[in-house]
Image (cartoon, rainbow, N blue to C red; front, side, top):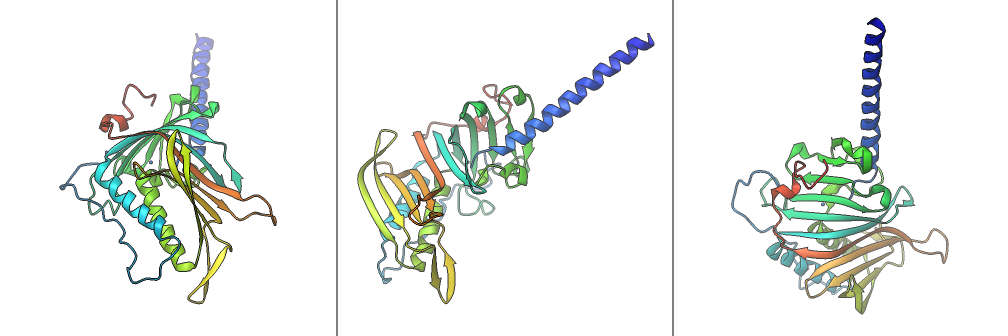
Length: 306
């Protein structure tokens, strides 16, 4: 009997050790690749977030003005007309000097109601499921602004998916392998970032802007706008300021007023060398106002594997 008891306790200890190992491995790999995306109790009537105002009409015209005008119109249109959407988000990012492999993720995103606490952007609920590469397929992530103490809930693909973990989006583990936290996900955040960068670059000096008609993304006709800076820095008010990119490409679906793809490149590391990709995001199979609900962002949803 004593020997049998020892064997039972040994088996229990081995089982516990395996579970702890799986939990640790799962937590590490989940946070290596969590992507760039209900907002709690609604306490007041909906209100439209403020769109950054246009440049002063008396200001000297700038090459970036047409792009800024588009971004403002697109942002206002997106706020007024789009409450949710689904898409396949494709991203590549330069993290720590290394380009990550191309990742494809099924994305569900729903906007909430703006409150004083939410800031200028609408609160976001986001669900992501990894599709490619194969080693990551099945990984799921949920983040709901204002819920779960601001933490994301995620699980790894395959057998490691048996364990779900919660972590702050900007924590060190969550940011491994990611250029931005998931709190920056979505078309609205992208448009606001384009406006912010455009207005900043406008103050720093001239830029070269090239337009290519009849470009195409995911079978949709687009206008490609390329912005290029000749030098990495500019002098503003006697101070040297760094540009964020050498070249940026924005593919614009003019029918829907949506940027379907954004990519930026740094300066070549060697003279006459290739430009270095910094970040690239594409929205494929984009569908607006599909009727998403709180259940789409609930880890107890039976369609998910949390």
